[in-house]
Amino acid sequence: MASSAAGDPRDFLGVDAGLADEERDIRDAVREHAGSNLAPHVAEWFETGMLPARELAKEFGRLGVLGMHLEGYGCAGTSAVAYGVACRELEAVDSGLRSFVSVQGSLAMFAIHRWGSEEQRQRWLPGMAAGELLGCFGLTEPDAGSDPGAMRTRARRDGSDWVLDGTKMWITNGTVADVAVVWAQTDDGVRGFLVPTDTPGFTAREIKHKLSLRASLTAELVVDGVRLPADAAFPEVRGLRGPLSCLNEARFGILFGVVGAARTCYEAALEYTLAREQFGKPLAAHQLTQRKLADLVVEVNRAALVALHLGRLKDAGTLHHHQVSFGKLANVRAALEVARTARTLLGANGISLEYPVIRHLANLETVLTYEGTEEMHALSLGQAVTGIPAFR
Image (cartoon, one colour):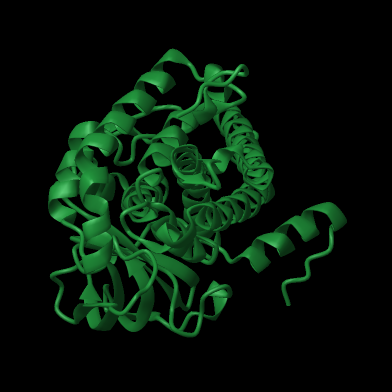
């Protein structure tokens, strides 16, 4: 990669100079692990539509990234920025790998950590932090995506037990999970339940034929008369406040993670255009190519600055969910534009899995939609600046 008078082309504005020593150490550890152990295999995982989930879970547990921003119960208790940087380095390899970690830590584990009883935390969190147990998060339904309040999954009382019926859709890690966090309508509002996946009536069916996020396991969950004891429910939280708080955690990981995907696409385009010659000189020597590369470096670094700033706000306890929407909307949009432009710079090679760009481009089309569509985050920002909700 070419040197720059401004510094490292990988970090043109020196954004990572703002990291604390521990955050930089975590960056280096995750980057080295991802580069050595994940990157050599990810194109094959993507092409075959598989992921060695159990093996990866134990690797991630040893690395300390599962629930790393949570306190206690075997979790590392790092800063939010450190967690974000770890997400960035994982997504620099593939969005599916970051999804694996963020669903485990920011959805399933965070839900138990924030809303569970002490008994629930002790039962599940240490094993999940170690990668010995896997979790998934059941909120989205076939007919209830952006409007989770319209969910049809129902939990009813039967004596002291709960009985759950319904279907959840697009659930990452659903086919390998040991426990599912399932949100359901009750007579007392929406409540969360911890469903061991070996409970009679629980079924997870793999969703196949995906053309995006293929290095990720996605499932439909069916709960058909699933009977749970009273202590399977989260004890206090009622309504959508519970699941939406978890989604906010996952969105934070995304706004950092996509910076890694964008960076990889930019680096691939830069290296390719410096090496590839046309009309007697490298592609990178042509004006139109340099204009595109300039656009890429601007978008990657702007997204990195947004992520770091929002991470510092989160660590200070002042981050608002509208600001998370800003980060998710802006950074995913930037990453998609970087991937699309990088694809053009690689020409025909841009569609080959021999290079990472088309894989990231396909993945980012999913990242644009999940954890809140672009439209929903735009409406969140619209409400923030006008004071007028326009969701309905």
